[in-house]
Image 1 (cartoon, each protein chain N blue to C red):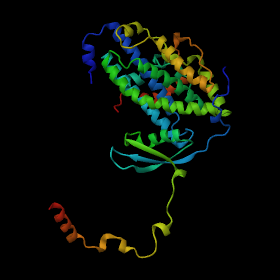
Image 2 (tube, each protein chain N blue to C red):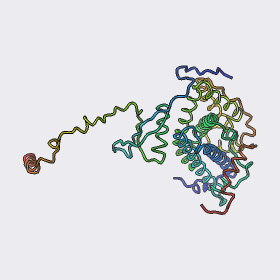
Image 3 (tube, rainbow over the protein chains, first blue to last red):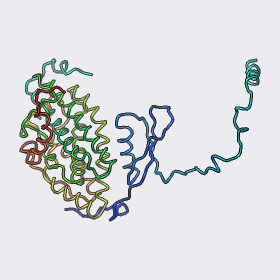
Length: 111
Length: 264
């Protein structure tokens, strides 16, 4: 038998690596936006990619996958930032009548 | 796609046809048996994600087996079909490598067997990549694209088990020791090898392929500090299957034997 200890000491440990969540994004066909597909549990990025492949493309339903460690995602969900209580209707385009202005602008551009 | 009839119509000598049948049967049986063994993990693999991964790998292997059996049936041209070849034989008529005869075992055994098999299969497929028998060459081209991922999966696990000191590493080494002299039986010389070599169906003799495999295996195993498999007695490398295979055979033929004439 050869030496029982692997030479790559840094990679060794006595405890099993903990599973963590990885978010999987998938692209259905070239040019499409990457869309969130779901998540997988895995101890590291390589196994997360293997599992993402099996979970989100084993029936050839994706042309590209992105795998992101969930804790690497910066979450923005504070309602004060995203859903402030004051009236914001003036920030929406609905109140402006644009049709005549647009027609004139087009006319100028074509001249 | 080259038709088999066209490839054979050119007049394949009888000894080459027999050699082709022997080669195709050995490859198909290998894929079929490892596929069935690994499907034994469905529902009980270490974690849910791995359960799906190993089950999907097992399905890949059964797909390769189905394609190889179908090609074999066309070469035989005796009205047998893939299902009949896969299921209607007695256990001692199967020609898979004895590496695949150890039963499912624990996870470390499954990974050890997968790694040894997938790396050996990759060397064998490479030797068929420019085969003069076009239908096989075209099939091998497709199979290799899937097997690339199988080697990646097995390597990922082998490295992790080898690096995790204590029980995972102990179990991996125990599995490699149990596989022992059957480790290289994928390279058991075929009776028809001279005909396959002369016709350029396969690029190199099995003995040469084994040496190639051992060289690449050795660099990996030295790095991970794993014991190299001992030299094998290859005389009965694909025959004399023992009790674990009989059990597996009883499992995988059980539905077929209920109603052999059924159409699926």
